[in-house]
Image (cartoon, rainbow, N blue to C red; front, top):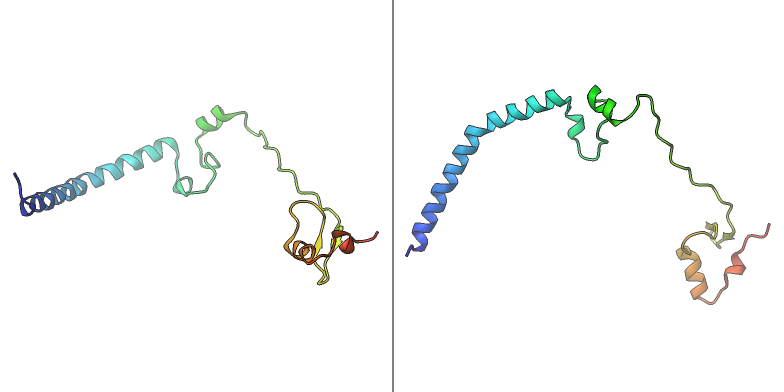
Length: 121
């Protein structure tokens, strides 16, 4: 049975071996990655987190496989601006859509009604 000192010595020896292997294989791995990036037309911009994949940097083969060139994407719908239906004592406004704003909820909790703050057209 091994004691703690022998095990710690083995751990240290294995960690040194792992570092040596990593150092030997690092350059080869980087070269493999660069070769694949070049073959697929991948740029550093493509590797940034949060960036859209397959943008301008994609290869012609990938673009052709994706769909017809010049095909445009639909634009997202813009939110419609809705007139305010309620106005608070400090000039706050609310359209009446979505969650009740804090200022109005606080006033209702004090015993007031929403109708007291309705904007008369």
